[in-house]
Length: 577
Image (cartoon, rainbow, N blue to C red; front, side):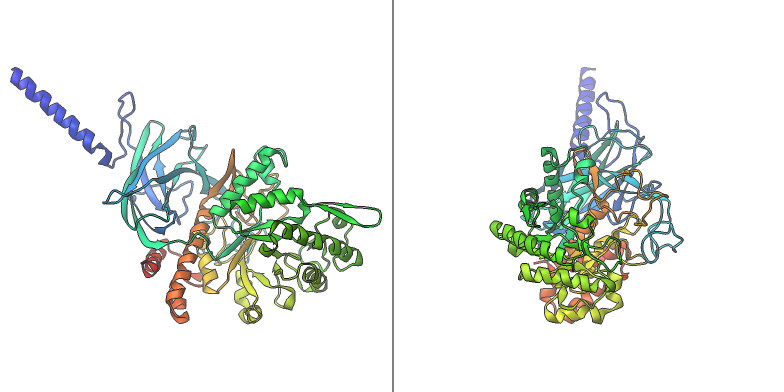
């Protein structure tokens, strides 16, 4: 009897030992709570990060259960996880030991973020803007509005929980150091939602190619300084506001922005009775130090003029609120006298800090034919008082001649008149790309109702057309009367700006939150670096053939993420050691 009891005890201990040894490798959603109550199973599915998740998305009957990724050294690939049946308000957490290769080399930088959905009330129109004014829906939108898509990326901290009416959706990012060894890595990520959890297996192939520390595709996205205070409950120019600006700057640089706009209205200006001006650059100087210390390498001097309404012929002085309110036209004697005092001081300030060589300068945004004379008056002032500084502006027509050095052009505009817009290249000018409330249709843009792949391929379009830079007007231009988590467009909005055009980040409680669109854009910039490596190995015809497998133009491209992944692998293998 004693021997039988002993054998039973040994068998129990053996079973316990086997279960203990194998438990980290059992890839099921069934775990146990601290009080040993058996958890209910949670159904989950894995989705490509280039595939939108919607509020009604489900893991599916045969969901993907293993995340398979491919990336270069220095990259940060990711994927999405959708859990089914998790109640709203459920607290979520994650754990992971990291990924390891067969030789014991670890990748420890694993982040799991909670995704939140935002509304898309109206689709983008075929020619841009929205369908509110009866424009046809743009070709190839991800879904017909209204709907909700998961764009917001909230870093998971203690107390993070799912929101009302939101599914439990997650974005998992894996940071690969540039020093990482190429090879195949595997590991697991545990995501806990309330009393339940899932264990997600991850397999990562790290290619034998290293991303450069700086990517040659310049990027500037204009930002709203005031919103960096008001949407975070901070007083303008308080110490908390300055710290918040620093957080935004770090996020911008992490997403490969290298140029920042220096708004010249931040310079304090005073005028005496003889129209002699004095200028205090202290506030702007502090801002510029933050941006440059974060890693920005170029300065975009803010506009010296602007139209009151888009398309008007008159351009008025912008840096001075006083002259702006007086509608002082930039070609007038009064305006030219102001610029003759202000621009030399702007130059002196920059030279004093060793920043002058980092400067490109705006005159006025999107000048039309009617504003040609006023634009030239502003450009002449820049040429005279800021010698050697390139003039950069978004333009609406190709006949500005030597008034512009860096031409910033919308995709459909450029493709509609290649010869005219390419002509300045022969003089050493640069041709950049920008998107805004246009283009619509099947063009690439970073809008909420466009497929995520279009956002990533913007950089491929720049590579296709040899465009060294990209501009967008809005990082965080949330409307003061709309909560970006609750409204993208209101029916009574006076403007017709399409969904997502105003912002690509969201105001978290203690800093900016990224988005699925912002991450797609970041990876597109990293793709550009790989494409430039390929360009060095190929002749022009071969390079064009390589790019054209994925992108033939800004409106002609691979729109299937699965096909893109195969083409991406081909690119990585080409440039790998």
